[in-house]
Length: 502
Image (cartoon, rainbow, N blue to C red; front, side, top):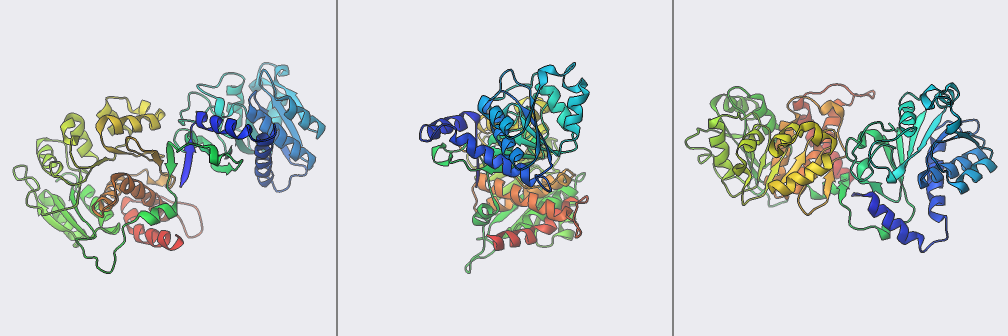
């Protein structure tokens, strides 16, 4: 499991460790790891052009010492000094090694209008962002903001030191300009803001350099499951298993208008390993599911009788394509009144936004909103949620008393009193209609199979992302568009590989 921490937690751990070590030991360890990453980013170090963007914090010192190590190996290293102060020891080490400081205060008219500085950045093989680090908060000020903009068009490899400047290391929030890194080399442990969008989208690849902090860190507030974690959690049949013991899932989805959501939700449940799927809906989606998934037991439901004729289930999925009228409300309420775990998605969330009592249940409840749906539930603008995903996922879990799977470019699973789980799998090709329906079916199958709401949601998101990657991947490399049903088709293979690797 990957653990991530806030800036304050990292600083406290650093203070504890530094009290036990000679002065400068941690910076030396960090600089060594950074220098190795920079060296690996070029065909050869000798003759490579390295440009360091140096602020006034310790990460500027890390960059300067790393630059000194690279200069001793024959790289041309230029350090753009952008802060009101500079790490004296690091600057002295760089100049002794043959590196060249460039004082930004001498730039004519600011970084973006100085041709010499622009040329330096444009010719760099590696551009090292050592401007703000984990101490940065809020929007970047000038000249840091201008330098961040220049990195966006730089042809070289952009490597951020600890955290891309402009990204809040604790939350992933970005206010204004921020560095877009190809690689972020972070020290001691991952920072929460590197895993959560929008900061995660600025991080590029993530490399954690061990500097000895682990024994001094607290329990993490943000974690991410790895493949072995998911493999260990997945429900697996034993010799005594039957379809009922493996989990019976009830799916209340689809309508005469939206039949596809029904087919896709059932697809996710069937392919994720549900022992039995009981599908309930109006006549047309029932006909479609019977034709596509004969494994499912189907029932036509009415607003008057609700789901009472469906039969016993271990968990319900309520909402994909269900509609948002009075009839949909009546059948949704009948399923959610039952004392079994439930997952509420799509139209079910729209109904719950109008009637919060649907979510006030004694049994465990998972909701799977995108930012717009969560915004309606909380009365908050979707753009605000997108900018502060970690905060609002936690808030929703506490305010609604449910497990929240917040979908998006980074998927978060929040449950009050527990670390937020970040999903690190997936592909942008998953942003297409129907993929959320498949995800709901997968998570519902795991709920019915006995996983806790948090584990069911997290494992579903992980596998959904892996299946999306597998569907999009071409035999010769690269990725191509996918359809939602492709994800369901890939699930058995993805699960097989995951379990074999573990």
